Image (cartoon, rainbow, N blue to C red; front, side):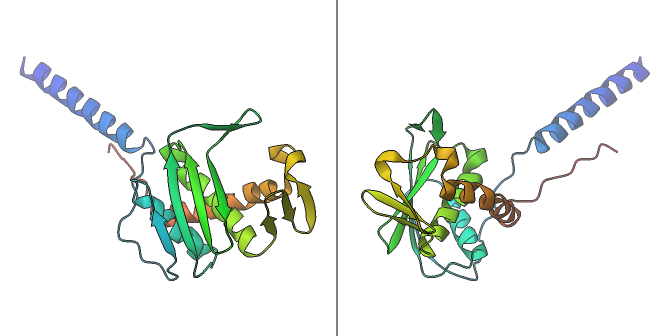
Length: 184
């Protein structure tokens, strides 16, 4: 009888350890707090998520972009364009940038912001210039009333390519390391 109770207790303990381990490995990484930046930009965070500010500052530091004012806003509405769900956008008046996020899933936020920061870099370098009616990208002219499909726009192709290494670097800096779990 005593051996049976011991076996049950050991079995339950192993199950609890496995559940804790699976919860730890689920990919829910938390954001680090009190990050320090080599380059300080002005980030006006108009969201309830304080870590958005860190993601932007870290991204700007990686891109070596200085003395910029970035405002970040979130709307819970979904935005669609050509059957695509748009998660973010950026506009500028030449002096400051507004990054607007549209109902962003938490697990995609770094990817979305990294993409918009590449656009910020394009604007800052004057590779991307937008007026009321036109877009110029690296000397190419686009009429806003007749834009190519979203995924074929050269500034979007460039942003998707360059966001990958940027988002990887941001994640390494702002996210707590993944926990490892060993049963034995």
